[in-house]
Amino acid sequence: MYDPRQLQVLAEVARTGTQTAAAEALGYTQPAISYQMRMLERAVGSRLVTRRGRGIHLTPAGKALARHADIVLAALRSAENELAALTAPGGGRVRLAAMQSGCVALVPRALGTLRRTHPELEVTVTQAECQVSHGLLLNDEIELAVMCDVDTVDPTAEPDTGGESLTIDPRLSSMPLLTDRRCVLMPADHPAAAQPFVSLADLAEERWVLESGRARFLAACRDAGFTPRIAATADDQLTLHHLVAHRIGLAVLNALAVTAHTDPRVVARPLTGFPVRRVFALLWPDSRNVPATAALLHALGEAALPTADGTPGIVPAATRQT
Image 1 (cartoon, rainbow, N blue to C red):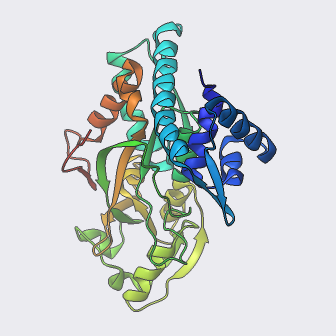
Image 2: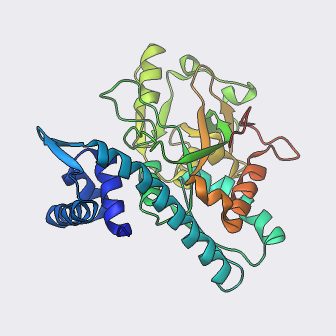
C-alpha cells in the first residue's frame, strides 16, 4: 500500500517538473520532497524519475503511477469533502473564494438563495484575487472559487485585473457563470450620461480615477489617440464610486462592481469597443458530487442570471458545461 503523502508528492513533481517547484507548491522543504520520492521508489521497487538538466523526467513507471496518483488523490479528496459535509454540525460547510466584484454582487445573491433553500448550510467567504483563489483551490483550502479569465495586452503588460496572467490547472473543472462588460462611472449630470453607451474617444479630455491594474485600459486609450489624465488611484470599488460622486474623475469598473452600489449621484454607461471578461466557478471535478458544494454551485448559477428588472451590464453565459 502506497503512502498518500508520497503519491501527492509524485503528482506535484509530475505537474511542476522539478522537486523545487513541488516543494514550494506543497509547502515542504526540498530535502523532504527528495526523501518522500526515495521512499516511494523503494516501495515501488523501481526508479520513478531521472534528472534531465535542471529538471526531472518521469520514467515509464513514474508516469503510470502519477496517473493513478491523481485518481487516488481525487477519491480521497471527494471522501474527505463528503464526510465533512455529513458530519459537520448544521448540515455542512463550503469554503468559497471570490474576486472583489464577485463578493459585492454575485456571491451575496447566491448566499441569499441558499439561506432560503439550504438554511443549514454554512458558507465561509474569502475575497481574493484570481491567482490566490487558484492556489487555495489546488491546496484544498477551499472547495469553490469564483474567478474571471485574466488577459493581458502583451506578454510584458500588467493585467487589467491587477494580477499576473493565469493558466488554469487542467485537472480542475469550470462552470461558466456570466460575461461581464466594462463600464464608465460618471456623475449623473455628466453630458455623456444621456447616451446609452460611451466611447473612450469621446472622453479624451476627462480626468480619471483608476485601479492600479490598468494596462488594458491604458492600451485602449492609446488606440483611441490619447493618454488619460489620472487624478487618483484606488483598488477599492466603493472608494472609486465616492471619488466619482465627488467629481474627482471618471472611473472604469466591471458591471458586477457597478450593480452593487446605487449612489444617485453616479451612473454607469457601458464602454464600447472594450473586451468583455468571462466569470466562472472553478472546482475539483469530484467536488460536484458533494451535496453542499453542488448546492452552492447551483445557487451561483441562478444568481448569475439577469434579475427581474434586467440588471444592466450583465449577460448570462451562452452555454453552461459540466
